[in-house]
Image 1: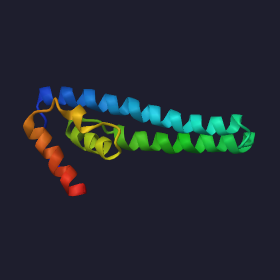
Image 2: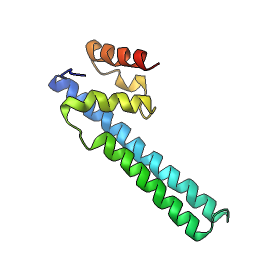
Image 3: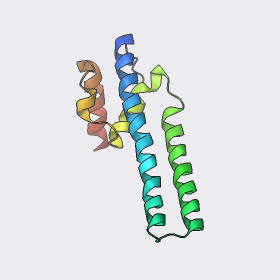
Image 4: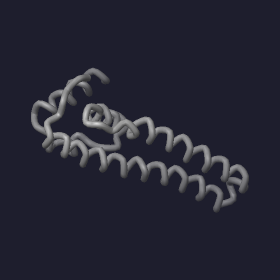
Length: 113
């Protein structure tokens, strides 16, 4: 995809990406919390809980890195499309984009269905 966002659209994109990033962090914490709850209820021993927490954190950190480490203006739409695909953000949350950007995103969503 080779579409350049305007300065105003990039500002909107950064806000949307930050919202999705915060939700991605929350999702990672939730996964770890589920393991901790199993451990607290006695369903996991200490070693298994530790390794499961470590594994989930490592995998989630890899996901975060793959999605957000190359966060430049030319990748903003790709990041947002990934966030939409993972349902970290919603279509309502991209409503501030201009019609042209929303059309590009909707075309991509149609292709992925």
